Image 1 (cartoon, rainbow over the protein chains, first blue to last red):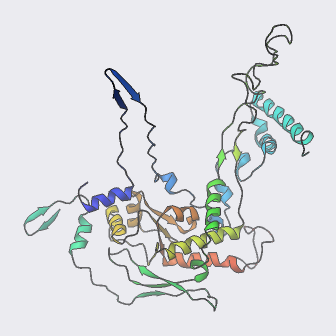
Image 2: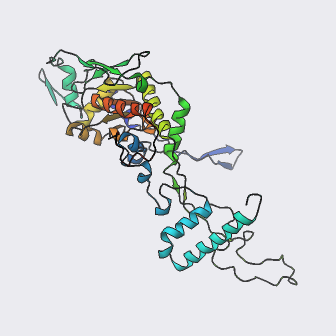
Length: 129
Length: 279
């Protein structure tokens, strides 16, 4: 690294020199080399990718933007889970309500079995029923 | 390249910045300082906090004027616990974990009793997919896509923003800029300006209006300098980026939006539905 400005650019970009892991060998005695395994090197994580740099942006869009958009509208994922939280039985029931009509046959049967099992487990066994 | 007294000097990249450094700073056209007062009423027992107004037009334009900032937004109690609460909320509320394992009912096979109950000498089993078996189902594993959604009260989120802005101001990491006009679209100019003014490793630039092309082009190729519209301001980003740069219009916008919650009535119905007295 030559000049001060280049050094600063290096620092601004957050780069680091990578060290090459070399396996060591100890020589003890005449003919035996012991291979010493070193712990794995920490993987280099770029903290400034686009996703990481812009994480959390628009989370306050409701407060700062006249409440037309709610932060739960930003969540991407299965439609029966967007902006909603529940335990396993509630999630299974909600999944059946939202997408049960278009699930594959075996998956739908497994879902029904699971709902039946969890209903009995939560409402008929244990201390809290 | 820079031609000076007959010798040719090659400088990779930063020619324009070099030029700015070596020439005299241009004459300031209007010598009147930019003074920004607080538009909203300040309580009588408090006074406004102040910040220098800077400019991006020249690398050393650091004292263009003075801005008054509302103390109930930029000088609140430093509640680190609220910062933590809001940052954790931002991390988790949109988290959906897709981990799922099959239970003994879902694993393929295992309907038949592998051997008779008595007589074979082996342990008794009812199915080859019970959790005791290799390849069998998992009992209490992660089940299906799970959502970790929850909402903090609106006033807590608002207070989190206020505390974060206060922390940035009090730790000398907040800079007010009169506008985002840049002389060039060279990303090197922006990076060198940030380094000269000791802004830190990462800069978050926030503006309400549409951003001029020069700064958009310059920040597009820089990793740690980000442009964000005012709607996108949030506690997590304020904690991630070392420096915050606000324009004067953004100050007014933020003060108006954040102070309204101090003296509003509680919501009888959600705010996205029309209210007669609140636009």
